[in-house]
Amino acid sequence: MINATGFNFGQGNIQFRDYQSEDMVILNGKFSYDQLNSRYLAAEQLEIYVPDLSIEKSAPTAVYVHGEKNGEKYITAVKSWIKNKNTIALEKPPLFNSGEYYNSFDFFSAYVPKGVRFEPQLMAKTPLTITSEDIPDIYIYLSQCVVTDSWIFLALKLGNCRTATEGEQFTINLGGMPSWPIRDIPMFCNAYWAASYGSYDLRFSINGSELKCLGRYGKAQTETSEAMTRLFIVR
View 1 (cartoon, rainbow, N blue to C red):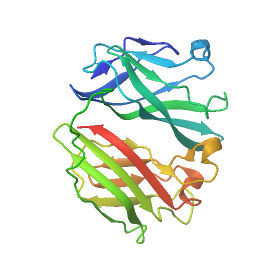
View 2 (cartoon, rainbow, N blue to C red):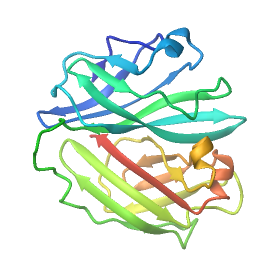
View 3 (tube, one colour):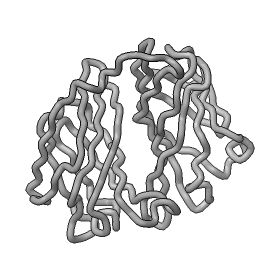
View 4 (cartoon, helix red, strand yellow):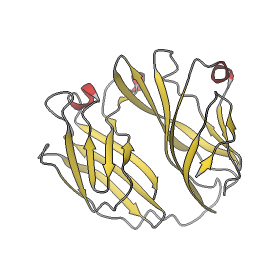
């Protein structure tokens, strides 16, 4: 675990579950922030200060940002990078800077060294299958799953991922997924307004091979048909 020593856009505690090697840093963690905080408003870019990381500087990666407005939950992504061994940088979320939103950052992020060549471990794929008694005609549009002793990479796009009514719970079983701790994972939904408001946030709880939509994400369940996610998860 990493405990941040500080950050330039507010007050509180930030903690990450981490995997570190000489060619990769993976961070998992979620925390809220106040976009009306004076320190947040004054910062040109957001910075989190941490003890020494295993790489000096990284190429850009992505961090999820959740926003909530009028009971609807939205999601977008911002750029993040390791600025130096003690600083993780984030761009300010352009979509959710209004005081109308409640915001949080959600890290499922892998950082790799900038300007360094190495052999990635993303070629040994684990095939996945999908079944659901609640949505019989759901299907995998695209998937890539890589399992190591220390981390899991999952890229997943689902087709026909919707229900007839809002608030309806449903469960999806992914054959081939290894065991891992129960936790929430973010899912993007296709939406024509995504450039203005972010995608609907169709979040699942994942427990090994079982993904469960908890039925609390409103119109995301009835107005979209595709859902996708991309995650690095520390085991």
